[in-house]
Amino acid sequence: MTVSFVIPNWNRRDLLLATLASLRAQTESPLEILVVDNASSDGSAEAARRAGARVLPLDRNTGFSFAVNRGLEAARGELVAVVNNDVEFAPDWTARLRQALEGDGAWFAFGKLLDHARRDHIDGAGDALCRGGAALRLGHGRPDGPVFQQPRRSFFPSGTAFVARREFFARAGPLEEAFFAYLEDVDLGLRAALLDLAGVYVPEAVAYHQGSATLGAGSPEVIEWITRNQILLLAKFYPTDLLRRLWRPVMAAQALWFLLALRHGRVAAWARGLRAGLAGREALRRSSVAWRADGTRLATILGSSERELLYFERSTGWDGYWRWYFRLAPAPQETQS
View 1 (cartoon, rainbow, N blue to C red):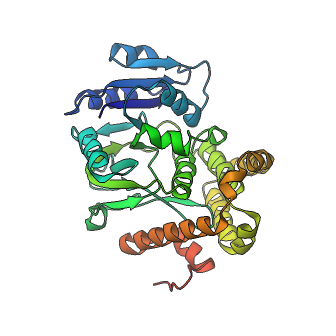
View 2 (spheres, rainbow, N blue to C red):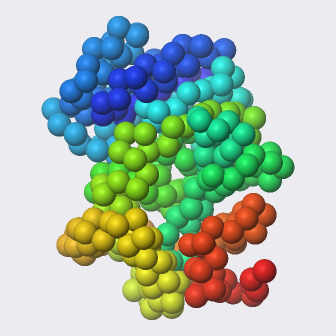
View 3 (cartoon, rainbow, N blue to C red):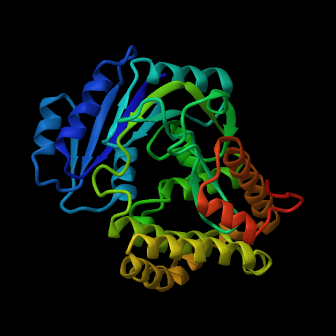
């Protein structure tokens, strides 16, 4: 099966070239590498062309989701790999994920992301979503260990680096462009779950991620976009009756996110995100009625994902945000350790 790589890019030519070099070193060569460039000003597009990539130039910074979707439209491979411009791949990454898709029957596959600077620490082993609409990159910042060596089924592809069948996007749809950046992979994962399009985590497929290298993890933009997109996620998928039933976890997740923004001195960014989310929620809600048709199914998906989140937190050590979340909104039939 042939693989097209789609890489959205905005500046950081140095990171992009390292990513391209690691793709050229793959034991299975990609069919093509498409760099969708968001009007970079640092020569990224020209450098990518010289490195052998096909460049799709955009006239402005359209964000992660829009750029990826233009790449999906242009890709010719039977499989499409969506990857960030700040990831370097082990030589067998492509081969391992392709083999998993051929042999497992999964719709998408993703591997273990290690921290680029601390390669014995996890950057991410997939995502999980709590009932309150907040997501966790599983294992982020934790030492690598046995819990991350186990393959498992998942509905949440990691937007940092994953491979999917072309038909996966035909069924689940492209990335949500209203999100611009952040949580677009969680949005895609919820659609995959509602359609029962399961993927697989392949721990042997290793890559190294320089997380939030372009903007910084606690930058105002990141806080603003995550705040907005959490609200949009609730608006898009949660039926009104489910929102009423889950008011406690929703309020806990959002209040704790505000306190996190406050601790980082990003209250103004949080407020901008809140305003943008509230302003955009009704339009998104009207355009996505079909995704709210089965509140019972969504409640089951959220419960399963939250239990996975809880398992990883208990197994690898509690993050303060999640310890308090489960104190404020205990999972059904769960007691905290």
